[in-house]
Image (cartoon, rainbow over all chains, first blue to last red; front, side, top):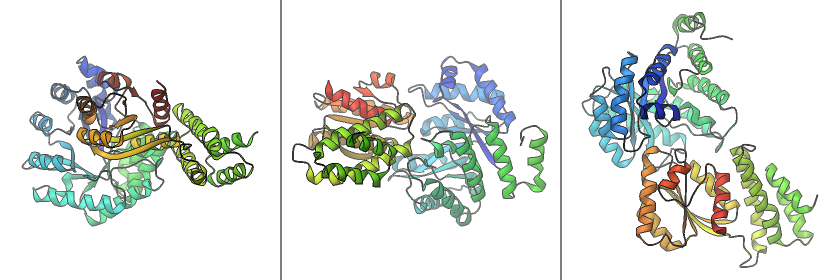
Length: 266
Length: 211
């Protein structure tokens, strides 16, 4: 099943930030209900944008979001202390966003994750920065999976993020991402692969069509999750269809169901 | 169209081979190298920057133009007399500590280089102390701080504070940029300028030096 991580509850988005600042629960509840109805698997919650308010904002958001949905949450913060507090407040096994191989952050996140019942997004980033090649991505994925397995994580609970980079600055970036995904899927069977879709189209016009095309191509290579906007009907339709064509949808049932629900119109 | 304006047009179109040919022809016709550099190439990149800023040109087109420019500058370099070089100012640039993102920084670096600045690129994950050290070593006119993460924005403030406390702020302009940064934040942390994109950054750097 394709895992849709709904990215809309993020305080870097102006409207969300305003709603959080005003403690406008109605706005948040309405948005979360829409994401749920549109087919989100997780609701990502990021409260980091109002510097100095993250703990209080996260606390408030978790209560409001969980009043609106039964879906599990994706807890999105670089700060293990915020994640610790958030972990204590969720009703369902959360997805944690994220760990990477960057020095201090890796150590503190490993301490945080040890013994917790959660899933984890693992970024292919290390102290040398963004990955620059297929080998960079695959090597970091290997290290992350090995480390996480050491502290008891099952592969099914690991979501590797290869860190998709824009086509506009290097025409090889799409191919690197696709080839890396294919390699990870064959070398590390059982792990999931996710990422922020819209990075691919940064700096180019008509970004949505690039995002859609890229998602289909990534799914063909084994990408089985994305951090995306579930209210974008076109991309959701594309996702359901590409996942079916890839062979992940028995008897095309999800596809047919989505068509009957009016979610896919050709 | 004059030879110089043909060069400018060709630069904007990003056709590197045609550009090198035109630059060579201009030299053969007796146009001084520094005139070609300043009045055709650098002024052409100003137009590219402006077009990027208003969305008429996209990043790949800007990259092509910059690549074409740097190839042609290689032809001119040996012909530029000392002191006649294009350097309009010296800029130190880096992504602040805790942040490893470099795409935005590299775009700004490229636009500033094309505008005639000398750039010292410190890279990513640069501590306030390393900025201070680089300022002492290089005596730049401008320091550019980059951050992509909301979590590393406070490090911009810290970097500016550390530079100030080291007594190096005099005769130095500090500019900031990155996806989560805006003018209000730049004002709040005491930066001298903010630019939303690489085209605007080049314009900003030039205007700061004219002050």
